[in-house]
Length: 100
Image (cartoon, rainbow, N blue to C red; front, side, top):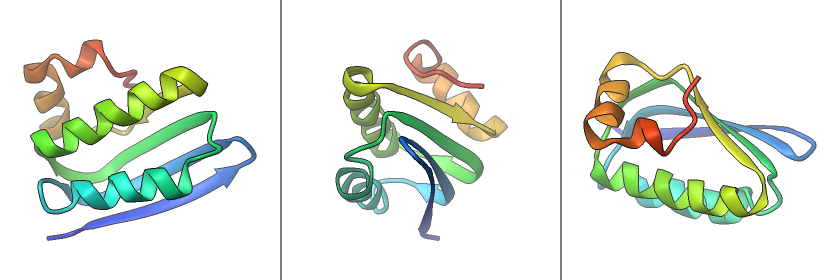
């Protein structure tokens, strides 16, 4: 299964909807997407409603995104499912990321 990335822009705020799996295969796609599409973003919202799985590679991309957004604005995650939330809790990412 692959990763689907969709972006909704509202001025300096971008909402990025992720569907599928964020793993070793698909994490680079999000990384490239972020560098190209989110250069001017000041408020980043990641919608994980349809994200089924995240691996350590996916976590690394999120960490990188968080570091970038810390410098220029804010980042939050919404609609995080149980499976993904559990990964965040086990890895301590709940302390690093803003999850609503």
